[in-house]
Structures are given as structure tokens and as C-alpha cells.
Image 1 (tube, protein in one colour):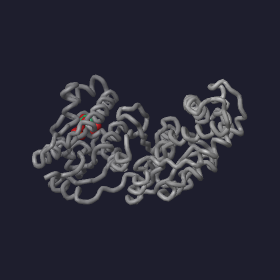
Image 2: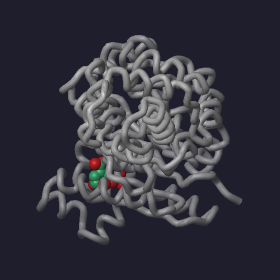
Image 3: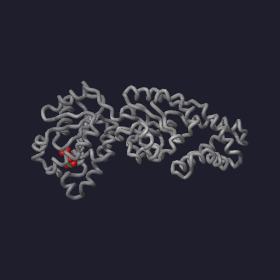
Image 4: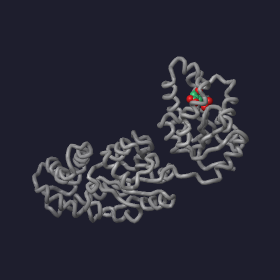
Length: 386
Ligand code: S3P
């Protein structure tokens, strides 16, 4: 019989019984255990010697590395050290793949359990437990008291549905919900033909693809305005093609083609529907122009609670003022309960992070380099995180 459908990560103070619970559930249900403190000792020697020689900071760095490794290992039970919650990197990695269980016990019980060990921070237990309690609570999917029978408590807890980790999903649209690459290609080809640009549609498509991101990045860095971008992108296209044309008129032609496109990425509407069923609010956050976005978002608008279009908001991602306006408009609440989801490191992830929001990046390869709290290759992984 299986205890749970995902690996379990145990967090909690020293003496809360993380290692012993992992051993006991593994003995009863099977499944590999990774004990982070043991793994640390195996690789780097005694923890108290390490603290004495290299200091706590060096320990924390390695501890977070081990957590990230364990989170991706597929082990059924991960027993963490009491200070695991001090680092975001390891904790978000655990959250992505595991269900996180917070183990507690009255302070006298914790003290008694660790009285004969040589843990470096044991003398400060009461203060440490109090200071870290908000972090344990933040990361806990379930909380159990381990003073009597922790296996039974765990079995009982896991019978109830885990609560959502987020109340709101702020979701980018282009290349997150809509196939923007395809739309852009279709629109630029049609515009080039109708406008009679003296180059083939293929050549125009290739050239536009090579210049457009650079122009958007200039907007993201605040070097040009949205209004300027509308024509500047085609000035750059002209340079790349070595031709001159009326860029304002070409912008009109491109826009009128673009707003006809309706390419929703596979699974996007089902994903938004599933998020709704979990009781989580969904808003689109897009760097776009008002008339343009109003049309292009039509196929997905019925699946969200609202949309924020940068031209209308007055600021473009990653400007924190964009995210501040969005948070205000949706009724702010607790920012730690809002997740930003998008494909762009420079607009969605940077803006979300700078605004104090958790971030999730849609990437094409699992090991993509990102500053996001989570990297995912598909919508199913986002549902697991939420
Ligand atoms: C620590 C807890 C210990 C161990 C290290 C630091 C802490 O793990 O990682 O001594 O900061 O609370 P246990 O919680 O398994 O004792």
C-alpha cells in the first residue's frame, strides 16, 4: 500500500522526529529515505566540526545544495535539518516535487529528545524554534504533532486534501498561454505580402524574428516607450533587410493581421480551468498594446478573472510599478500567496522577483538556467506547485 502519491519532505526543529519518522514510514510502506544531515556527514564529516571550522554560512550553502539534489532524486522520504527552511533554493525545490510535512512537538519534548546529542545550535533551541516557526508554517502542506505516534498522525493528516499554496496566479499570455511565435510569423508574412515589401515572406519572417526581441528588451529596460516600440521594431526590420518603407503604415498592417490570429497553446484552457477548480484566481499579465491584446486574448478571457495589459496599466513588465498596480487592483492581500507564471526571464521572472512575488518559469528544457523559484516544462507541473 502506498502512503502518498508524491515524495514526502519532513521539516521542523531539531528533535521534532524527522529522521525517525522517515525511517519508520519507510519500514512500513517501503521507499528510499534521504536524511540530509546524514548525507552531509557522509560527504563533509561531522556537522559540529564543520560549524566550528567553516562557520554556519558555509554549512547552509551545502545544505541547500543537498536539498536541491534530494528533491530531484525521486526518494520517497526526505528528512531535512532543522535549518533547511532558512534557504529559499532548497525549499522551493522540495515544494516542487514533494509534499512538505511540518513536524512539531512541545518545547520540553524537543529539549528532552536532543539533550544527549552534540548539535551545534542545541543550546539556543527555544529562541530558534520561535524565530523559525513562521518559515515552517509558510512551507508546510501539513502539520503534525509528533509527541505521541507520529506515523499514525502522518497517516491521518495525509487523508485530508492539501491546502493551496497560492491564492492567485498571474499568468503571462504570449508563449505561456498563446502561441506567439506562430502568430507573429503568420502575421508578419501576411503583412509583408499585403504591404508589398520588396522581399519574400520567408526572408521578412526570419529578419523580424532576429530583431524584435532586442527591441522589446530595450522597452523592458525602460530605454524606449511602448509607443516608440510600435515603429522602432520595423525600423530595425528595415535595417536588417536593407530596405526603407513607411514603418507607421507597416505597423498598422502588422497589427491588423496579428489581431486576427487565434493560436492557443495545447492544454492552456484546460490548465486555466483546472486552476479555477482549485479555487485559485487567475489574471493575465501581458506586455502588449490595448487594441491588440483585447482581440488576441479573446479565446482565453473566458477562463480567467481578468487581464492586465501594460499599455493600459501605464507600465511594462518588469517594472515593479506594473506589478504593484496589478496587486492593488486585485485587492493585494498576502504577496507570498501570489505566483507569477511566464516564459520570460527578463519580464515575468525579473518583475515578479523584484516585486516580492514567487515566480515560476515555463522553460523548454528541465535544466534551463533561471532565477525563478520554480522552472517547469508544462502546465501539469504548475498544478502540482499550486
Ligand atoms: C540544525 C539542525 C540539525 C543540523 C544542524 C543545524 C538547525 O538538524 O542540520 O545541526 O539549524 O536547526 P536536525 O534538525 O536534524 O537536528
